[in-house]
Image (cartoon, rainbow, N blue to C red; front, side, top):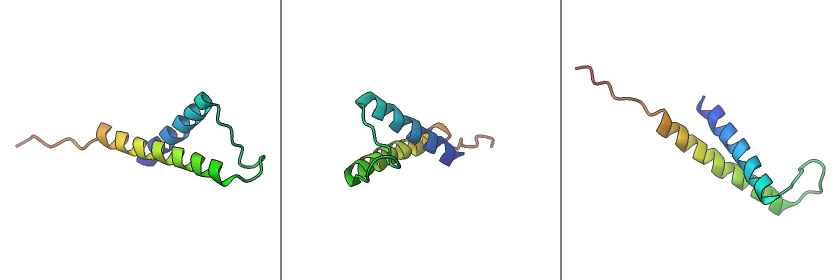
Amino acid sequence: MKFLVAFLFGFLGSKLLFSFLDFKYAAFSEPFDFIKMLINIGVFGIFFFAGTVFFKKLYRAKPDNCS
């Protein structure tokens, strides 16, 4: 579950940011560009990491108060 939430957050967040900034990179139809690939992977990685942190904070294990 954590991976799916983080992946969706990373994928949708990077797509939204790239559409907002008008950044277009079609990896399979354009010639290979190392800088654009690094930008694409880096932005996805940042959003993926933010998604995992968000998931951990949202679904933190609740302490058991039954004594």
